[in-house]
Length: 201
Ligand code: 5GP
Image (cartoon, rainbow, N blue to C red; front, side, top):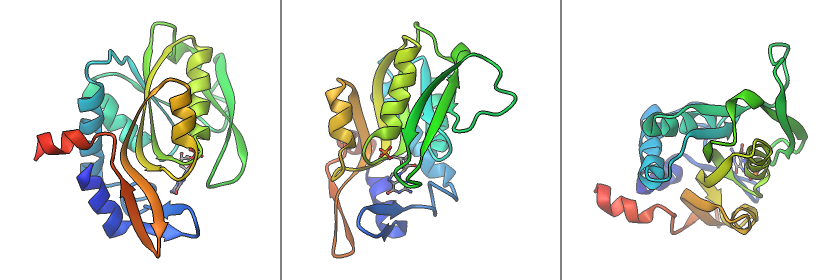
């Protein structure tokens, strides 16, 4: 997605070997116009896939997931990282290792929100080694729902996540694919939605 790649070049900051900081528009301050465009793009890709739920993980997946769900006209569910006293329903739970926090946390979704009739689109802000997306896939499988695809705002293609998701037979849609950080510059591979850029010009 050209709009997103341009924004990453303008506002993204490389931290160390393999982290991109995008707190200007995605992970802290959120640019709703960009999120709206991202939601429209995921809609373009998945509008004919019979999606009934969009699932993400708190916190930074919520903004792109919500705009995607709004376009698909379905509910958005975010997996919660900490159990609180209002969560007294039966829960689907799994363990997710956080790439940025370097800790494992238990994440959960209430059983009532995912059922075997659901066709689910996973959305997340970043893809690194795939732990978050695979954790969500585990919850979807526990619910016996059907995972349809994984939509990622920013994929770091030099890490292992993409291969691990494709191995599960899921469709992958990354709107920006970073192939390398080279001499302080961000290099992109062709995004999965590139064909749609030409249509929306
Ligand atoms: P994974 O689970 O695929 O290893 O990592 C994805 C998760 O880690 C995302 O939900 C995101 O919160 C976080 N993450 C991974 N890489 C980055 C990065 O380069 N920048 C930021 N801001 N978050 C990242």
